[in-house]
Length: 261
Image (tube, rainbow, N blue to C red; front, top):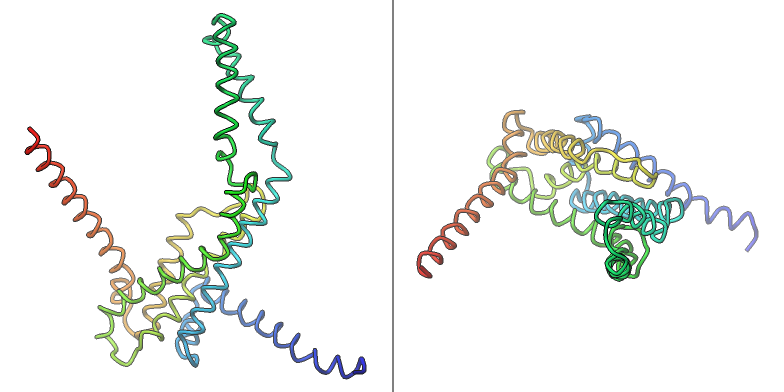
């Protein structure tokens, strides 16, 4: 095959990738900055459930990759565990309880510190310093998007349960697609690829909640007060469930204590 023929074969593929990247960026910006037309576009796409699933899964993979790369950067730029161990030990040895102790206690303390650090020291960091942390980081490529997809499905199901009466023509998939777009602020977590750079989790949660209100309003073509109620309903239901479980646990503990006495 000639170079010109190869170029003709590869051009559509590269063009498609570039077009999809631009479309994703436009969607992300629309979702982030609460553009109603972006949520409506996502709702009205052919097979909205599939598009919503791919969107939220892609964001999850990007965030997971950023976490893995960030851990690698910290591993090569931060002080080693050995340096941290020695620094902590020096500060402990400078404390009065150590300086005033007899040599036998100091020797026992140093040995016990060394033993405890060798056993638990590597767990003080999330960087890939041991096999467990390395496996956990790689596993984030699956657990992060999977966890978000599960929350997305359950959250959307609860909203659809109470909101379908507002517009019976809106299907579950037509709700899920805009809700997937409402996860756009989660992509800010990718900043963790840079050491000491991050966005407050509370800011991301509140931003996402506002996006969810826009998503519900667009999906059901309803009013803002109804959309607020729909977006908050699963959260209120979860809080009520936690309260009920706590009350049940307290009652069971009280009954158990009364019987034992």
